[in-house]
Length: 222
Image (cartoon, rainbow, N blue to C red):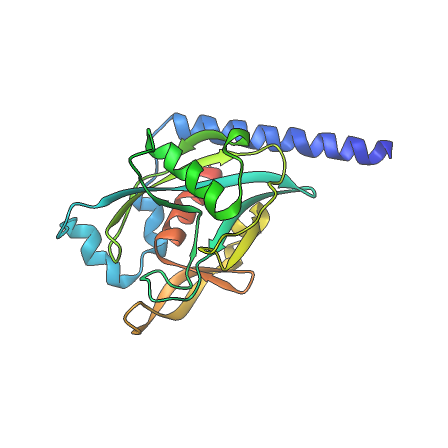
């Protein structure tokens, strides 16, 4: 019993050090941005990234990258969207969505959406910074990924916008063997090969993979 308490205390101290170092890095120094994201950019997006010309003004949105301790591991949450007629059907993403008039700022958007989609209590989340904005062309969203943590595992439940919740360990995320190429179908049913993370039998590609690539680059610096 005493040994288990000591092991838990050591792990929680490790988690505290990790979140503190990550916060310091996010708030001090330039974000790696596109330089880090490029390893996960699909070839079909290269021209779009160069031009930055959009038919309509992008819609503001935000996602939450949430870390938490669970059974001796540092984990984060991702979700799988249901298969439907939307442009992001069946894709892996972070909890998040569009900015609404009731949101005072974008960070509130990320917290509200995480609460709605996976039942995370905003009051228990400590936000420590954000990653670089990413434009998602098919839906014309300009996304800000906010980073935060909770001191314990949230009581996770998905709503009707979530087909599956993925709890991904930091060890999985940092494993170079999880990076590969896979053939996917886009929203227009066209097949092409994309760089991706293959984690828990799921393909994480596109904007979500670009966010992860930047996050990993930052974590490797701390």
